[in-house]
Image (cartoon, rainbow, N blue to C red):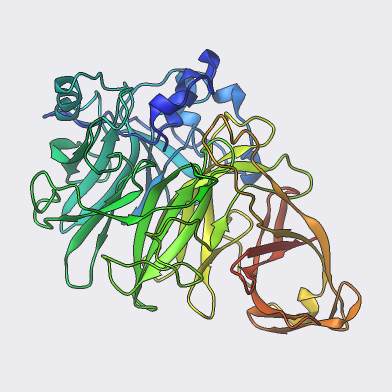
Amino acid sequence: MKNMNRLGGLFMPLILAVSLLSACKKEGTGSKLTDTVVVKPPVTTAFDINSITDTYADIASFATYQKWTVYNVHDPSVKKFGDYYYSYSTDVAFGTDVRPGLQIRRSKDLVQWEYVGWVFNAIPAKGAAFISNLGGTAFNALWAPYVLKVGSEYRLYYSLSSAVPRLSVIGMATATSPEGPWTEKDLVVTSANDASIQTNAIDPTVVTTTSGEQYMYYGSAWDGIYILKLDPATGLASSSGDKGKRIANRGFTAGKYNGNIEGAEVIYNPDLKKYFLFISYDWLQTKYNVRVGRSDNPTGPFYDYNGHDLNTNEDHGPMILAPYQFANQSGWQGTGHCAVFDNGSGQYFMAHQARPGVNSFFMDLHVRKISWTTDGWPIVSPERYANVVQTAITAADVAGVYEKITLNYHVVPGYGTEQVSPDFQTAVDFKLDAGGTINGNAGDKWTFTTPWITLTYSNGDTYKLKAERERDWENKIASTIIFTGLDKSGTAIWGKRK
């Protein structure tokens, strides 16, 4: 999330709550704050996936918050606890002010979500006091939480910031249930508007290593993404007052910083025996996109697709998610600040916010299935997850005309003022001919060995795309064939069969 002091006039008073969401900050918890759990209304009608729309002005008022299922979601943190996936997200709503406290939702299938309530009933006292003591006033909003379970204890990290640059805190609360009540424990890391070398203390994520160590990754712009060692017994900083060290940064163009870097998420993949660091680049309302690096160690160095250290001053790839547009829909922008989680059986997913092209102030929850390339990089589905049955796919099924998107990228240095365009990557027709050629070109070939489509071009380029079945959301088709992968340069290639 971006710091509120950089928002300027981007968000109109009409959508005050959206301006809150524009900054991934979380507010701290008070010393004895508990959650306000909503009594969920009885389900009276069968769920219809076609009822999920891109915009939701008709239920935007605070009075209808129980209907905010996949709506008004920004900076989600998602984990599976028991039978439910729980999502915790920033205090924000379209077209209305919203009470602080971090929104809670839950789902059994990652498709049908229900609104549960809030983590807190007020701004956390310790975080607010820290900001006040340094001459600032805490925002009346909490941003970008992160949740995990340690033993029988649930731990929730939150960010609280202010209008003073970098005057922010990340605090921690605990509970014995994912729905609370939650109790504030203490501040984990802080940042101030001073000359010390540090980043902005917001956007936390935590990884637990195979040996039981814990590390927090955090930060937004300024001095990049930092890593901080935690005490696993308490969930707080291993050394009081420690800020950690920088582990990721990005590039410059003509001496100007290339927009934001923030919203880190880190996982350990036990099959690949690697740690993966996901980071969001650019302005959250438009060009927001997700990059990824990997490492053998939680403390890094993390390397990009070209083998470059993420902590060097350059823009890194692969970029696996970015603003895009298929036919019959206005496009999705602001596709960043992801949560990465698994289902307990090794299947990973990515959740993130997305804003429709028709109106970038709406914020929808998207969940996508993650796959892994044969050389160990994560790739995401071009369509949102809909729990589609995965029946066998044959070469005859694969042949046909697709809408294909190549996630190209154009550098626009700056922030919201400069990045006014989402730079949608739009779909073009792409044909896998029944005879094994591509777009009718005899020198370009494709083959299929489940689940991989291999494309071999006459210029020597060869790459693989994973084929699966997924919902066509733009055309409300229950199941179609999609593909996803990376080309030889690490550019993401998406497609869905028409």
